[in-house]
Length: 380
Image (cartoon, rainbow, N blue to C red; front, top):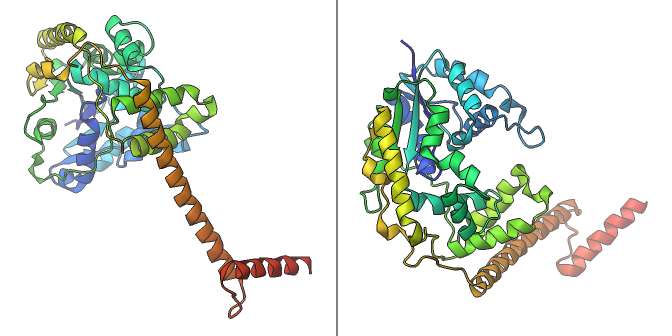
């Protein structure tokens, strides 16, 4: 019998990081219930996504990225589990041809497609924030306008990664409808753990014994995200490279410096509530018509009125941006001072280690004496 393999390809910002955190923290518990994570390491999962999407960059990525998809069937077989899970939300933007290639590589498996989906009132602001943390520089108002109109900066990227029907059209391929699964993200106020229960229940796993895992996504406020967008707009191309920006711009500046600030969240303008409802109804009707499997409730896709801004717009003021920038600069200076102190401490330790035992004068004069002695030894 062919091994079932569940391709969880997105959508982004639908609890994917939470679910992946639970999965990686619970590998042994999942294995005990017959579910294997393939590939077997988080970085290899990312490598697989790069290979599927033809994103390999020899200057930024390890050589093992090439051929990651070719290795996947063997990894499934080697796992020897009753089922396997691939979970990488950045696969959602793959082209139809790239999705076809991945399914073809797994022709010997029973392929299932899994999408986690959420209402647009929460999804659009989250997608904008993610785009900014991925080097984007589009202000929130312009981003929302482009998404609603379906044209303009950010609109194409949003459609490819967030439009449920567009992603299904590219990824469902010739799969029978019972092997295409939509897991709905519950509305605010739902008991904790509901999403995990839905997701892992689909995979035949009892979530009761799973660990919570680590949280990898860090939200930043509307003001802080607008500030980051402006900063991104001033960066030279060299600083915006994926391998550089990910560590410095996203994981350090955004997720440590800016996330530490208290900021109000970005919220969908109330003027677009009817648009969100209409799009939800369109998705619900299509999913029902196609006969896809739904885990949860399609009513979760209809937005809660409380998710919208009280007014049609909640503009960010220059004063708010200035305050956020000042706080961020202060944090950067504090970090730089700490790094400088550590570097100087390492330098002092090396000098002390190089000095002759029993001949280590203390203080600044001692340091100068040791330096003069080393210079003199070098001239001899």
